[in-house]
Length: 293
Image (cartoon, rainbow, N blue to C red; front, side, top):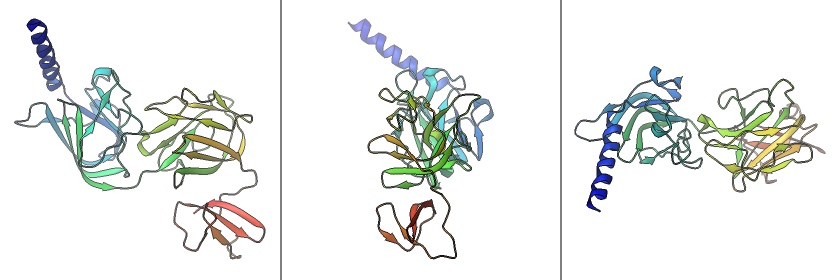
């Protein structure tokens, strides 16, 4: 019994020692303003004097959507977010996961996109990370895929889905890619949280199946889509349901500036001051047009 006990201690000490001997790298969508996914091209952590297993890194800026690894991308030392719902709060310890025991997605900040003058502290004793600095920017949500002109861009130039309560939505034109795949996902800035095909999802979104339940998975599979034409795409965070509704004839531009329209929010309440990025309904006589400010 004693031999077994001492063997466990020795194994644990060996794991700590190996973690301390590793050269740790940070990779992600925005490391000092650059997209770096090759560890060899990015900055490395340095050991903190007097603190066993603790490493630190100072950056001019760190964007949401990053990971920490040893440069080899092996499952044991590829650390990131343990789940799609886990978000990093500035100044608080964030428990990471590797691909051995949990999903290892990109780490997403809670409500902001970038930390300026960032200090990243890695503790290899429990594989947690703490980020401090100055938060900047807002997290946005995007519809990405082969079936839209914007493609797989989840950032500037991408198809943003403005949020109203628990629902994000957008009106866009879908097309069928005859030369390749027809997949899509719903994701946020930095690809930290991704909604895609889940265990109970339909195999394909088509004209006879315009609603499908999606589950939250760190790196869920893409969902196949077979629709063409103009659709309103809505996703409810509470129910995890994505809905495609035909929007033929619905424009996503403002009404004629020479005619004074009456504006309403999606709850039917009249509004006078429009907020950039929100979805509204402009009513002019018997005509109603839904648009994004």
